[in-house]
Image 1: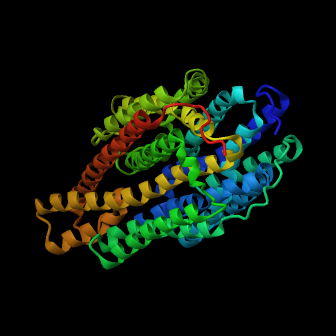
Image 2: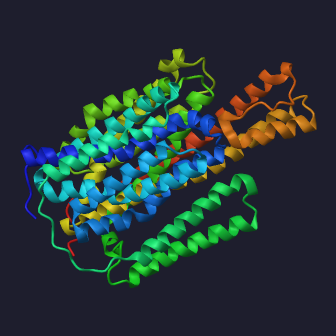
Image 3: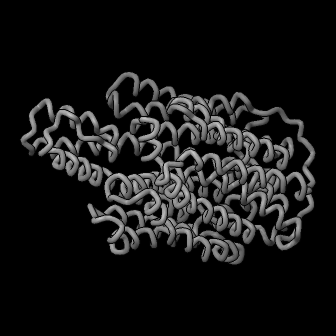
Length: 514
């Protein structure tokens, strides 16, 4: 396939369409973290419902993104990319009209299908269409713009949620996606590779979808049924068995959706391990930071979104530059220093206790967010460059799909596992506080029953008026206790990601050519 210069007219239209489509997909995840309190109140959602709203999209995305990348490589990247955008637009519009939690979860699944076809196509189009010498710079540009829009999601989401318009966070995808489709249809004239004629691995897609769904369901049910329960053990064992079956099917298949030969590249394997640990920590950390700010620290949803502004500014200033440096010096150094810096920022954020609200932001949350943002600014472009450079162009869509799938799987398990752990930590801290109180046994039972709602826990109506503030304070302190543990686990996962770079990232040279 012929390639074009990044600064050419064709290159600019490719970048513009890819950035718009990618931003549309990524904006939902960050904006949703901020609008969750409004959504929870509007639809009467429980804490468990919130994690399903988040995970329905991520689960479908993680399950199908591998086959989305394979479809692009086999049927034409631009065509599959455009189909994915169209499905995502339809799913987003349906989410905006959802009357209940159940319908919202169903429509989030449709969004996930669109995302699975769309997201691998973005990086695949860049890798296959932009001149090889400029791909790192192009990926850095893509990373910077999409991250700016993505981190802008909380600001927009907060403003809309405070105005009672949280549904518009879904509706906004319609004009963005439509603009991307028009650009691709009218202005982007990439020459597609001929179809390989290879059959698609639908069996593999079905098995990995079932595996992830089973494991996610198991973790989401732990807070309500406990870990030492036959249903939990059964679901976990079934999920692990299906994961092993998926790997076996990929090994035996002549046309696997995830060719195991990709992992013969040490850099590719290491980059995906780094991705998994880093984004699991990132997903858990950002979710609980957002919930803490709004539900416990007294920030409005707009103020919560604005707290991430330093992150956005750093991405604007540094991400593209990091991509250029990765082209020149290789990605290894950035992929070691970045995760360790990010982990340090998350650890500093875990130390923040109860504050007096936004007026104390600069001395409480700002230092951690600044360090955390600085670390991530030097990761995104070099990590993507390392992944895409470790395989041949023929596998660019599949490689992008695998790495994006790793990111989404990490987010799925972060939300599911951290959600379960947060309820357990919150309940334990709350029970300790109640044991030292003068509440009756029946009052303690009613107070503990709200634990599944975490920071949005409501004081039971049975509690006397004079004791309401005591219960509210107990809920807040219990959430902060759980938040601190979750953030430290998140920091540990980021450190583990940095260790993967130390051990495995060696070269940016293409290692898989077959």
